Length: 536
Image 1: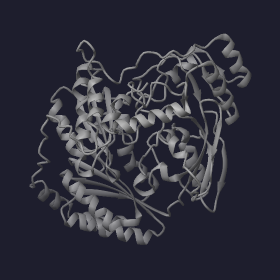
Image 2 (image 1 turned 90 degrees about the vertical axis):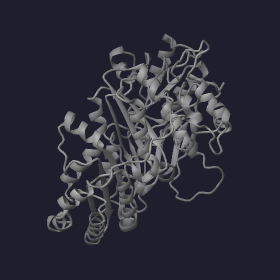
Image 3 (image 1 turned 45 degrees about the vertical axis):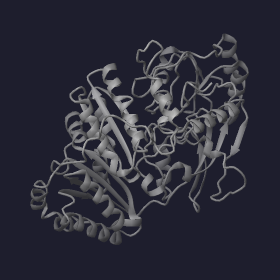
Image 4 (image 1 turned 135 degrees about the vertical axis):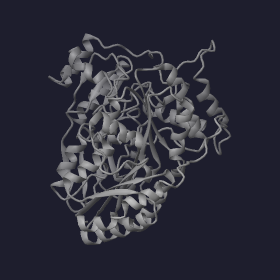
């Protein structure tokens, strides 16, 4: 869409903005803060277990995110190191300075004490390592790009770190079907660049794409910015190669889109966070690269108007809509303050990033023009700008993708990844601010409106146990009340494992435990993660 067309759409911006600001900004009424737990289909015992874990035997409060006691795994010996060096010549790292970065998560909130980092290059090497570790009862922490936010990618104690960083080969690409097969250690951005040269794209896009690895993406069922258009990895991943705890290689590396022969075993490992097996290779269905891409950055006065804009957007843009993201004014303040990123439009309480992608620029531009005209004349948005050039597109996307970076400069961050019915997303923000009062430095919200995913972030000047006690379990109780998920795309890891009952029933969690026992009887794979402490 050219600048002349956009001028026609936005020439009445000032008048519309003035009109909108006369409208009420009142949001949804605050919730009754006395949470009720009569959830449809939820086992009352499940919620009781989640609440009980906050209180110790003596009545004192303890964090369910804290590490449990070390399990009776063996400790690494000189003899073990000799075996590893035979399997991985020159790729057994024991220098504390080199191992340190793999012991600590990206947020620097979880730190293990592993003394051994292993870097296999092949599936067979992973198989030999796990077979040996299982026979010796040595715990193993699988690790990809170490960009996780829930403490799932680093050791809790002295688990052996099994890094997939050297498993970075692209095994095949079918230019007709668009099916890519690669090792688990391929960095997402490298896959993006590889595919772009062949006129294809990856079906997922993440802010951490420069560091995260496809195996880790699959192991955590990462969502990202394109889920609205292309769906989750449960749909786009066609096959996996996985090494089980005893070293057995499970070859489900299918490149077929349709295969209805028995149980779809690969689904067990998507989102299992390395607790059931180590993913070593992935086959994934990749879409064609769009010939026409537009990004729109809009401002709204109320969240209700934002939701109505989303509804209008889905109806008018239809098949070319690929992303619908939002951020609030607090996010914009952090971007301005800490990263010096200027607001591309006038100040608004809420901002929207919309991406369209299609095959016909004239067709897409006309649909986008019609949508923007309707949104403006309906007084749903007050200001906006459109980008069609790559540099400007990246600049607009940076307003959404760099929020996490801005938060790191604002202090210690408590991060929550919540999935809710779309109409409830910002109500949680409103109630959390009211609940916390002035105890937090910042309470900011952004996320994926298209799939009901809110990223709630709360900052303080330093780690604050009292503030954390005010946030949790309030945030999880609130989410449970409205039938949401306490983890939309980040996983449970170490930090959220004991909160699982807010989103899953007791029988469901018990079945997960049975699956874990079946596939990993000794529990050596990523212990202390994903499943709650009460499962024995």
